[in-house]
Image (cartoon, rainbow, N blue to C red):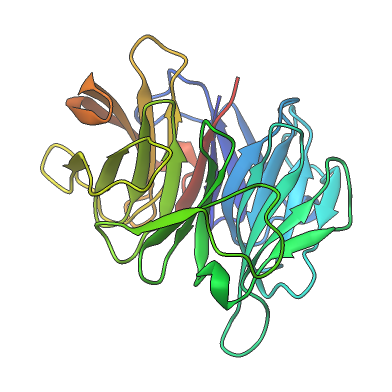
Amino acid sequence: MIYVSNFGAHSVTVFAPTARGNTSPVRTIAGARTGLAGPLGLTADAQNNLYVANRASATVTVYAPTADGDAAPLRTLRPPGAVEVLAVAVGAQGDVFIATCARGVTGATAIVHYPAGADESDFAIAGPRTGLTCPVGLAFHPDGTLLVANAFGGVVSAFATAAVGNMPPLWSFTAATSSTRGIACSADALLLTGPGIYLYPNTATPPSGPAAVLGPSPSLPLRYATGIAVDARATAPTVYVADYAARVLHVIRPTGLPPALGLAEVSAIAGAATGLDGPVGVHCAP
C-alpha cells in the first residue's frame, strides 16, 4: 500500500499500489479523534503500524495497520522540548527516531530516540557538533546507519543509531540542492528531493555528486517535490514523489541500473477523488 500524508487536509490517504489517475483511496485517516495536525513525514514498523510526524502539534501519532476514518491513535509520542516535529523513522528493532526543529529561539533541533514500545524518550542526538540545522527527512542506510536530510544548507549526514548527544556524524556531504525536502534509501541508491530528484550511489562513504538528476521537465512536471519513497519489491522498482504544490503523487518507473536511472514511465495519482491536499510524506508498505 502507498501511504500519503496531507498537510492541508490533516489526513493520511492510503492507495493500492496499482492506483493511478483520479482514483479514490482505499482508506483515509482523518477527523478530530486522529490527532493529525499538519502531518509531514510518515513510516511504518514491521507490524505495519503507521507512524505520522505532526508539525503543528509537535507529536508522532501511531495507528493500527487497518486504521480508517476518525480513528484514535494507538499511542502519541511527544518529544521533550519539541516545537515542530518533521520526520520519523523506525529502526530494525522497533525503536523510533523523531526529527524535531527549533522555531526562532525556542524549541530544540534534535533527533529524539524512543525504545521500541516506549512512550518516553531515552536520549537525543543534538548540539553544534551534530551539524543538524532543520532535519526534514530520515531514512536508514542498508548498513543500519541513520541518514538525516537537513533543509537548511542541504547537508545529508549519517549517524550511528547508538549516537547520543552532541556527537558528530559518521560522514556527511552537501547535496546538489541547498534545500533538501525528502530522502529515501534503497539497496542501490540514495534519493533526495528538492527542485528536482537527485540520485546518488548508495555507499558507506559520502558520495561526490549525484549520478542523475530528474526533473523538473515536461515529462516530470515537478512543482514542489517533498516526500519520496522507493518500492523495490517489484521487478522494476517504482519511485513515488509527493508534489505539495500540484496536489499530485508522481509515480515513476525508472530505466537503467541504479543509481544511474532515467525515466521509463511517469504517471500520477491526481484529481479531486484522491483526497490529496498538500501531500508531503509518502511511504510504501505491504
